[in-house]
Amino acid sequence: MATASGYSPVIESADGLRVELDDDHPGFADPRYRQRRDEIAAISASHVPGRPIPTVDYNDTEHEVWRIVSRELAPKHARYACRAFNNAREELQLPTDHAPQLDEVSERLTPLTGFAYQPVAGLAPLRDFYGAFAERRFFSTQYLRHHSVPLYTPEPDIIHEVIGHANQLADHDFASICAEVGKAVARTEAPEALAFMSRVFWFTLEFGVVMEDGEPKAYGAGLLSSYGEMDVFQRAEIRPLDFAEMGSTEYDITHYQPILYSSSSFEQLVEDLTRFYGTFDDSVHERLVAARTSA
Image (cartoon, rainbow, N blue to C red):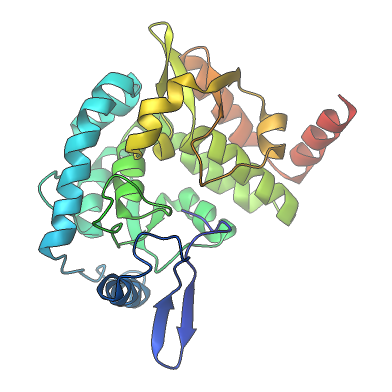
């Protein structure tokens, strides 16, 4: 996931990399977990592009966290995810018995849609994260959330990046839309425009829903990787897609999302997102902001 305020920054010091956790983080008072986070950040940071991704030797506790989340999310996906996501999930066949290496994820994903995973120690800058989509590369963390609350994380761990996004990216339409996001980054120079597009991404590819069989179904990776969000998202206020509104709306990552945006059908969703990301640049940003200001 891209950089956002409130997430754990990775600090480089004379002693190596250190992950700073907020005092309300589940692992804040656990020295073994904090040491483990630092170790995994260093492993991720050691990656050299073009070479195999460094292996993280996950321990039994980390594998168990992956197993618990995989087991608990599966029935929620079957009930609440959109058909495209569930079909892609069946094709991708992520392991449920162990936390996978990122190379293992790529070996399954690349033959389907061309996307491949690359490690990142912390959160990538917006331009780097989204820009890599143009080359069908996805930057992912490699650490897992704290074992005391396996169904909750205040930050995007490998469970979010893989169970949420890899399953999404295994669908050809979503993969193509993400590639258009990357191309839009190359056309966009103003930081304000890039932030605007990032907020639209949040309300679509992270927390978007689509109407199927008369009810909202989730397609956003943020929803589909969150046990809690999957329980409550259908009770949110659901509005039609409005790019000017989405790009201008701040969101709170620490609470369930109270407002979501939906398309009337999957076909309409693909058409709308392809058009938006496929044409977005500084001038589109200026036009949308002006239209919202004058409304």
